[in-house]
Length: 358
Image (cartoon, rainbow, N blue to C red):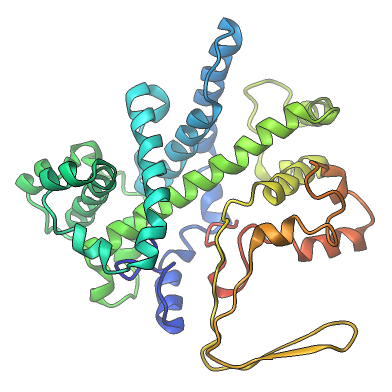
């Protein structure tokens, strides 16, 4: 959906993209996110509660559903000052998983036909439910967020909020900054503060921030438990900084645990959250690329270029045995780690790289 309604992520014009990205860049910075550490830890405790239940009963469950719910509850608290409460509600948990799956499934269609999304936004909900229940589920989420954006702008009416099902988002404002305020209080022109655009921007941040996090976390859970020696080694290291199961060490402390960082890096490499190509265009400058052997490539200004992250992360010329989960590859000689780090691009590269990389 990112190529529609003039989103920051899908904006073609280089200079307009920089403006739209800057409106939320500070909001999703590492420093700002750290202020929500307590809130994030509270959702982790809820997730652990669910896992403990299944561990005690021996029941099987779909881990990805719970990881997506945890990620969504954490991200929605941050973006909207209000958790979706998915970990506490099985029905909503399943509905949201299906909604995210629908967004991912429909994105290629919208990408090829950018006029499609603006058109379907004008279709009545009852009719869209008949035509495409999947699309209608996505549109309902968009309408709820649009209603919230209008509420910030004092443009919403009680009738419209009820029609759009916005009551789930009708929580008292806490006074904290959120994604809506970040965009609407920015220096963007009024046309970029249109409720439709703001709603789609927040929806993209929510889906992008939760679905990709779930994908990486799912790989961590699988590989840590299936790769011999990793779980025991990681547990011993975490025991030194978490003296009790409910301890919440500061991020700075966790970042100093080299093996933990290595596990995260290796999971980011294997997960490859974004599998499609990410085209970039240098609008006015000619790009020059040179190899160590003296070979040079000149890319004229205005030429689209792109890379496939999965091809880089699974290149045996860069990563030995690329399909093996080997955190130790990130613990070698510093120069070797630096070399590997140059090719670790789970968030892309350049001005269009993922805004949530930190």
